Image (tube, rainbow, N blue to C red; front, side, top):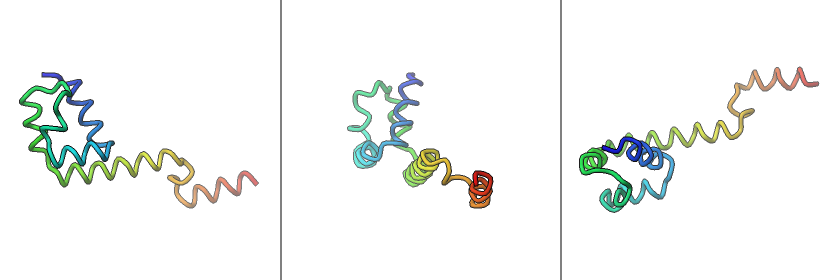
Length: 86
């Protein structure tokens, strides 16, 4: 087993829309040459596709929120920060 390769592939699968598209259309093609063994590839083939898309969307939303930290705070926290800076 190659846990590091599997974890790396899963991380890319959740964050790379193009890889996810290829994987959903042809898992064998998407996993070829990634250092995964047959049991890992089979486990990936049986992944919950709707869950994969939902998780990927959720992670993208969280990454976007971290990219703009002031936007992720509540409106009251932003208001108070504005008042204190005045």
